[in-house]
Length: 326
Image 1 (cartoon, rainbow, N blue to C red):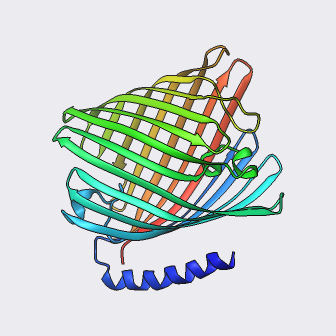
Image 2 (cartoon, rainbow, N blue to C red):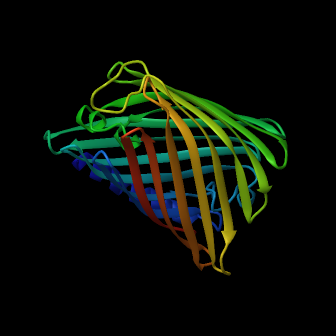
Image 3 (spheres, rainbow, N blue to C red):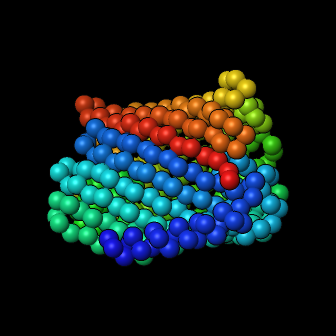
């Protein structure tokens, strides 16, 4: 942990340098999220991040430099419990990106992730990375590619994710097709090569229609998802084959001059291995409050629920964040 604190000190020096170079397009975020599931997995996340160009949905690309290098950092603290396994994680990442054009972007993160499992009196450090590329092949078609390596406990693969210090190399590819302004077809696939010799493979495709494509915006459509693992494990959810077919809706709209809202929901039919079909649903609601021109407070809550015969599962999450510019 002493080495990690030394890295934090070095980060503060870099941040002071970044602030000197910052401009009205930069973005910092201070936030926290708390989630809990019906199978006794609890996780609290604290985040502090900074980037010199706003590449986040609160400030779209067209408010950033047309072509520029990005730099910044992200610091996360995770605190959780899963079936008697208590753990704490600290992750520090350096961020670097290059916006080549309005439709082409290359970015990456590289960092250090310390996982401390108090119930085992053990801790490990891991060098992590997350590289991605978004390439526009035409005005209406783009592809994205990604490669990453990190622990997996923060993605919900618990308690084994924390107890066994599970990590994974993740490979991802996807596309987005926009044949007309009001239609988008989005697909993605990924492969996780887990450190316990298990593999996770997933894919999804959805088609959404812009009832109101500009802001305030409303999009609705259908989606299909499939997920599976090569080996079934007792300490994290590992279906051999899981699929979901459903309808989804998302929107963003003004409430007052300084307050805007967001609402999204989905319903689906699900099928896991040889179990009977079931139902799934999710809902998210959020509010953004513009404190001043360059400072926004965001509050959000979500719930996911699934049921197959007498078996059910749910997750609830709450998030609070402050987003602004220097």
